[in-house]
Length: 421
Image (cartoon, rainbow, N blue to C red; front, top):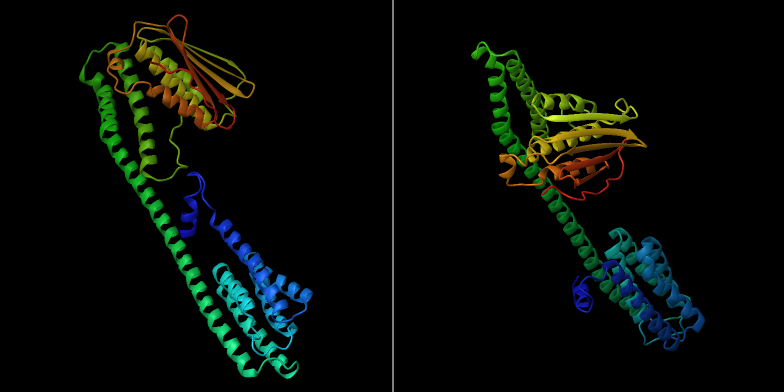
């Protein structure tokens, strides 16, 4: 990380060195450097055959990058070179043997790479293998090839064992520290995720309480008042009593959907669905209720019959879009003429809600603090099922909302060309 920070100062702000790439660069450079030094010393100082010394040195230095990819093969191959390389040199009595200094450095680097990158057992096998290989070479050289005195060879091997053993322990400690650190970071991420989920659940519960206290309670009062109005006011006209009954029915339906919504908010179960779910075929009932309230609205449906095979999510989205567009027309264009058209064909369902200019917005629409939220909600509804919303003002001063929904879920589209001011 320190090296990355140092080199990062010379790089653009949007580019940083990859730690893995940096490790490969360091290992390859070290391997090339040790190849040049070790081969030249083996041939020039120890009088080893040039071709044989260069070949074994290439293998020994190559075990450094090999250990990055195949740690076990790197450990085995480096131990083999440690046993063979001392046997190809000429008789030497003053230079270190069986461990030449460059060979010692190369093998220590191999053990460091294995200790940092591989399992500690593989690095330990490379350490013990190199000590064992050099010991075998010392025995063979002393008794069969008349190499350096046994005391000097033993001291040489002990020096290597101490250096390599210390590097091995340090590398394993660093690796375990990194492992523990990564596990701690993972636990912190898991804890943060669980905290986020808990906060979300608590927020859902708070919203559910607010909805229950404000909306559900008010709807309950409306339902009770509308249901009891014919009893409390005797002699009501039949049409007035029927209107109170319709109000009570609408209030009960809204309460049912509200209870479903509260259940979703209080239970962290994304698969839970509202019950009952309005469908696209329920738009006609919605239009009838709107007409009973005195709104001039026409409904036209054409194209293929799709109700039986239409997905529930798409049918619900279509119903909610019509419901919201109809509500917007009533609030923003009083006493306007509203036309609803639903057509199907070519794998899509087209919904159009158009209203005339009317007499302007209602008092509540003028005092709204959050304007345009209806169109945002419709756009989100359509996008959730892979559809799109287009909205625009008509040439006559009215407003049109057009939705295009697929008959099956597809990739979400975009498009809300113009929002109601």
